[in-house]
Amino acid sequence: MSRLDTFIARLQAQKTLLEWAAAKLQSAGDQLPGPVIELGLGNGRTYDHLRELLPDRRIIAFDRTLDANPRSTPPADDLILGDIRTTGPAFAERFGATAALLHADLGNGVPKDEAVLQRWLPGVVVGLVRPGAIVASSTLLEHPELTSISLPPAVPAGRYYAYTRR
Image (cartoon, rainbow, N blue to C red; front, side, top):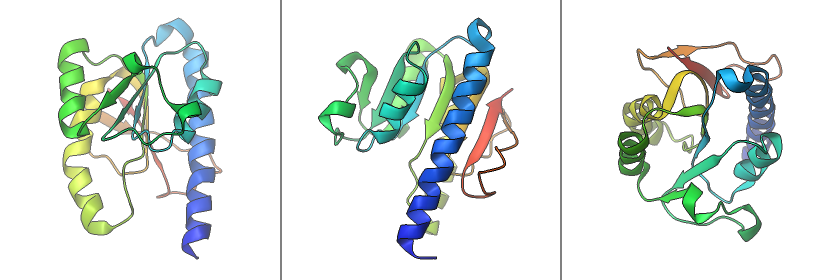
């Protein structure tokens, strides 16, 4: 499979998973309050899609720098810039574990880099999400507070991961 085919498959899986997660969140309604957190704003495509899927939810985006398309840039109050290893825990310390949905798309597919990400990302995620929250991640997350949940059938195993916080 070419890198282009892999990229397209990843985006299809991401779109399917986010739409599935948003539907679960909407069906939970007031039972699962809290914002949506986007770890890795990038150019803002996913943020923009989440905005359409969940227009009544606050969406807070984290990234190292602002490189998003101006049409997909969050308001200043909903954009946290800096190293997520630092800004994630600082946000959690200030506001608590409040997110109802968290999407993390930080990996690059390079095994060495993924291994580093897998060491720190699960702890950051757990610090940001409330019990019962949905976590969608392009990176495998192993943490005692996260339970893997079944993916929608259209998402190939190993392409994306879904969890809930205990």
